[in-house]
Length: 78
Image (cartoon, rainbow, N blue to C red; front, side, top):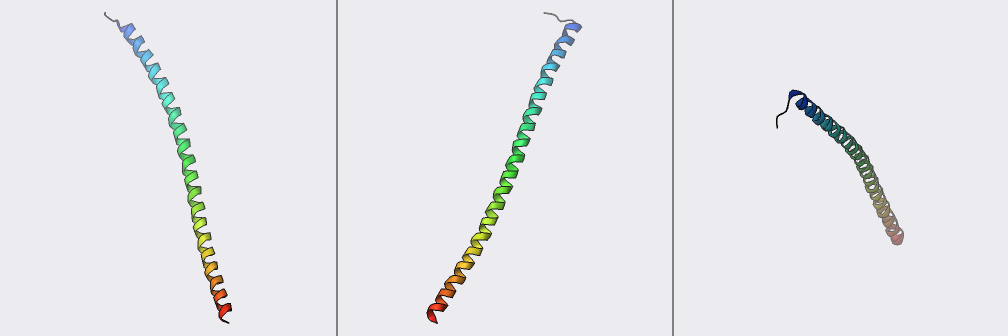
């Protein structure tokens, strides 16, 4: 089957339309993935901050327990 120039051009134009629509869909998917990644980064940062705060509070509580144990021991020996 032979194609003339006009048919080839029309087919190429149709192919371009299809490719353009696929590109648009991929762009949307990329944007959605970027948004999910940003959300995940924020969530991870929040998690890190909570864990750091928890470690600090645990350290403070351990120090307070040691102080209270020392105070109890001192009072028992007095």
